[in-house]
Image (cartoon, rainbow, N blue to C red; front, side, top):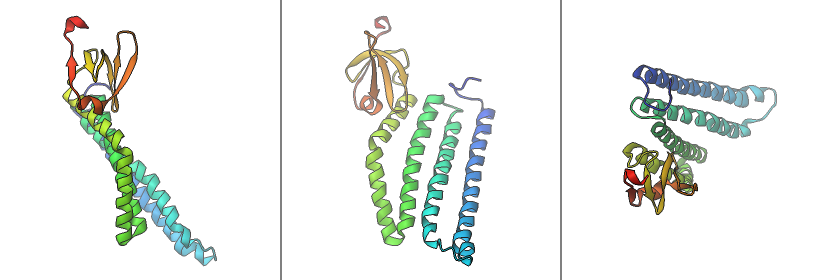
Length: 208
C-alpha cells in the first residue's frame, strides 16, 4: 500500500490505536522502573550499608529524559497517523515534527522545574523554556511555515515558480525547505518561513 497519499480509515484507526498503546506502555514501564529505582536506592541498598540516596535524583532525571523522549515521540506518532486519513505523508510528517519539537521543549522545562522545586523550579523551568524557545525559534518557524505550505498548497511539485527571487521548478516541499531546480540544474533549498513572508509567483504553463 502506498504511504504517500491519505490512508483508509481502517488503517488509520489501526495505526493510531497502536501509537496510543505504545504511549501507555512507555508510561507504565517508566512508572514501574522509577518506583523500583526509588525502592532500591532509598530502602533496600541502605540496609546493606550502600548509601546511594544522594544519587537517586540524577538517576530519576535520566529515566525521565529517556522515557519522556519515547512518550513525546509516541504522541507525535499519534498525531501523524491521525492526520493520514485526510492528508498525505508530507503534511502529517510536518505536524509530527512540530509536535515533537514542542513536546521535547515542554518536557525539558518541566523536568527543570521539578528539579529546582518551588519558586526556584518555576524560574529554572521558565528560563530553560526561554532558552529552548530561542534555540528552536528558527527551526520551529520553518516547520510551521512548511506545514502551512503543505496544507494551503499555493504551488505544487513540478510547478514553475519564482520564490524569493529564485526562478525554477519545484522539486520538493519538506518540513523545513522547499527545493527548486533552476534552469541550469542548480538545486536551491529555500527556507519555508522566507517563502511565507514573500510574494509567490506562479508562471504560466507554457513557460515551464
